[in-house]
Length: 190
Ligand SMILES: CC(C)(COP(=O)(O)OP(=O)(O)OC[C@H]1O[C@@H](n2cnc3c(N)ncnc32)[C@H](O)[C@@H]1OP(=O)(O)O)[C@@H](O)C(=O)NCCC(=O)NCCS
Image 1 (cartoon, rainbow, N blue to C red):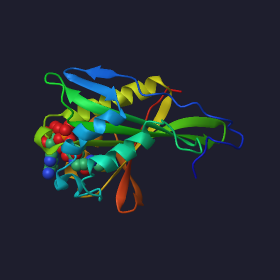
Image 2 (cartoon, rainbow, N blue to C red):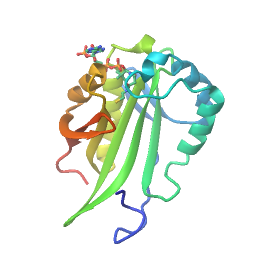
Image 3 (cartoon, rainbow, N blue to C red):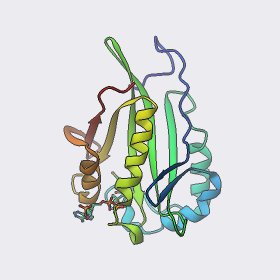
Image 4 (tube, rainbow, N blue to C red):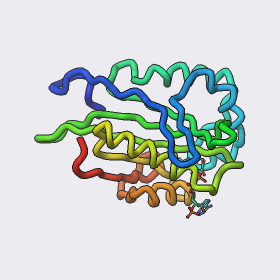
């Protein structure tokens, strides 16, 4: 289903994540060296209630980050952009925002689509951090030509649905692996 590496679309150069700021939040492009600190942020099993998975050991996270910092899938069809979220002060990591970019071809149209993911450590939840951090990523991606955003959210994940709704996403009727696809289309970009 994914496009962008071949066919009539030609090779794709994906944007690289850049440092972003919004209010008191700093979003730094992911580094492999963040794995140790992030293993602590991601240690609470409550984070996986609606998404599946489990708390990663630092070594596993380091391996995952080594792959993610390459910035694209090995076949080139996806761009991988990741940011670590840090409120300032104190500047310690509290979560991450992830964007997977794909190029979609439609009749008369070739557009960039980003699937977004967001996670904030339990201690820092309920302060608007996911909404503000993801909003900054969204705005930056629009400036890079992304025309459609997607998020896949478990129907019982009320906090994540609220984040999506506050950002302007709307639920669709599409259910994938038990998660509902939420979509935000941006007019006039790309
Ligand atoms: C989803 C998540 C990122 C939200 O992070 P956050 O920084 O707390 O989000 P925000 O504070 O920006 O917004 C959360 C909203 O949900 C609300 N909320 C939190 N828990 C809720 C619950 N159980 N029921 C209803 N609303 C809830 C908050 O009050 C807030 O709404 P408000 O701004 O109107 O008060 C965080 O809960 C998380 O990391 N969860 C685990 C990972 C996950 O599920 N990621 C999303 C995968 S799709």
